[in-house]
Structures are given as C-alpha cells and as structure tokens.
Image (tube, rainbow, N blue to C red; front, side, top):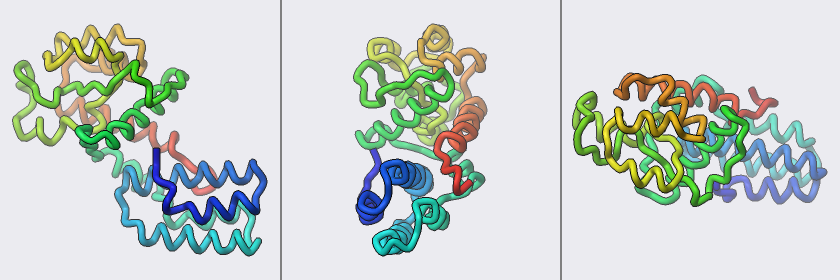
Length: 225
C-alpha cells in the first residue's frame, strides 16, 4: 500500500539485528508514520529520509534497541492534533487508481474499528461510493457548483457499497440513496443513513471530523503518542 523506499535501509538493518517481534514492532511504526506523514500530511520527504538513515546506521552498529529506534522516529511522527487537522481537510482524487486504493484502505480500517469486520481493501466485491456524486445531475441543491467541485473528493463524502449496488445508484439524489445506505451491510455506510436526515456541506464536514477522530486511534504508535 505504502512505499517502503524511505524506510527501506532501516528495515533491512532491523531485520538483521532485531528479533522477529521487535522487527514487526518497528515495521508497524514505519507504516503508521508513512500514513500520518506522507499519505495524510503530504510532508516533504527530505527530513524523513535523513531520520530513517540516521536510525538505520545506529541499528546497524548495534547502538540502539528497537524501542530506542522507534523513539528516534518521533521527529517524523505528526502529533495527534496536527494529524487530525490534516485528516479533517483531506481531499483524495479517486480518479487515480493509487488514490482509490488509499481511500479503500482508510474506509476498510474504519469499518474494522466500527464493526470488527476485517475487509480486504483490494476486494472486487465492493467499491467506493461518493455520497455527493462526482457528477450530480439533479437533487443536490444543498451544494453550489463550487462546493461540488471542492467536496466530492473529501474523505467525509466517501463510503463503501457492494459493487452491484454501487453501479445501480449512479447519480441519484439523497432521498433515494438513504434507504440503500440504511440497508447496507457496511457499518460505515449504515451510519451515514442513521445519522443524517439530509446530506449537505455541514453533514459532510461532520462525518469527516468523526473519521479524523477515529484515525487518531487507528494510525497510532503508542510509544510516540
């Protein structure tokens, strides 16, 4: 899902010098950092690369434990308030295949937190559903044209639906979408129907705030938080 180019030297060193348990702990920390720093934060990679290389050198020379290596990565671990603020504003253009995988990964992680269901985010059995359609035809007067362009690809506007259902919904309006969401087997989708009498910019923003609140706990490194 995420590129290992940046932490690769560190992971190679860790594989050679740490136990399986410690290696897995460090690997998980790198994944969480990549999600916070790169995927959501869009931060420049220069500082990240310097940090990974410096820690990799210490590991290679047996100058730090796994716990110390993880602690040394704190400078590239966006703290909760910064991460949450970035998540609240995150826009992901699902017109690109890589971005679709990112959104599916996020939604599947939220579904697991909400319902305990562990989904394969690469599964062809479900698709990304845009509540406000990417190209709405009618029935979306709560959004101006400018808001449609700005909000259609906000994370708060996206959820999961089984492939056949998603295709059938097309660009229909909210009153026709809501009962379909209510009957969905996906908790993240059912939740939208249960909590929203209408769908407008304010409700979309509220959902993305909820998602950000969950994200802080999902993509978390305990040793750095």
